[in-house]
Image (cartoon, rainbow, N blue to C red; front, side):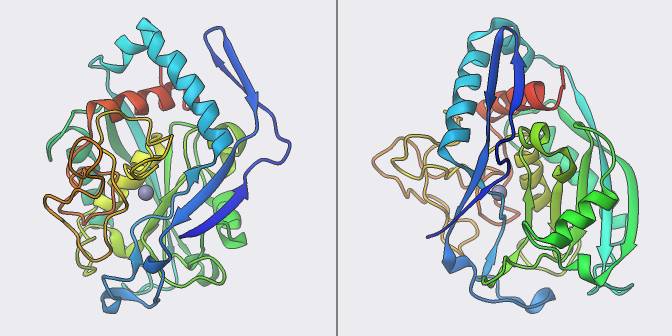
Length: 326
Ligand SMILES: [Zn+2]
């Protein structure tokens, strides 16, 4: 397992008001991902389907987990918030796409307007429960498409200066605007592999609003020729992170902390290359088989079709506290 830690606030204090409860602290991020998913690089459909990372969104470190856990516990004790989490209220999220292309060719990242319009439809079908699972209160509306030709930014990677520069220059809106930076994604220095997307979490907005948003590989938009991940469900997954969700395999079989959601069975990260392992039970000592159909695992696009009620509650907690969606 590769482990990367990066502090996103060094000495930065932030205050979060949850009725009478106030938390002041510093949040860090930690990434743990299988190095076996980072063994090749390349472009377009010629990439091996066994050598990619669906998502490079980072798990939380212990301090962040403890802080969120405490706040989430308070949230769940509050009847008013429980009622809000199960209400029929709908939150429509404006989506601003930033197409950071190398050139005006398809392989240069020139994603069509039609693909982006279809992407919004895919988000709405997933979050409305049309594809399965629980109906969430979130819907998405196309706000803008901004096209930028910049070869250096086109290959921005997680934590890179190109990412920081691009987001600083392009990002629009506040905490409730979803900015999606569509580009190629270079793996971190010293690493190899293909990353299809990554996102910030809602609490990060309180610390660094300028980095808020999702970076999406242009190969993962609907209609591309990148098999298994070309129906738009990668952005559904990343939007889940942007709304607060962690991977369902967080904590694997016996970790103290999991994904904060009690109705997603424990699992180990799905095996690379097996995109819909029906019946897989990687944690046989714990209840339930692997949640292979959940949007927040690492199976293929067509396998990931649902959110759970517990995930909806955790999204509501996150968007209420950190994105001001009352
Ligand atoms: Zn992810």
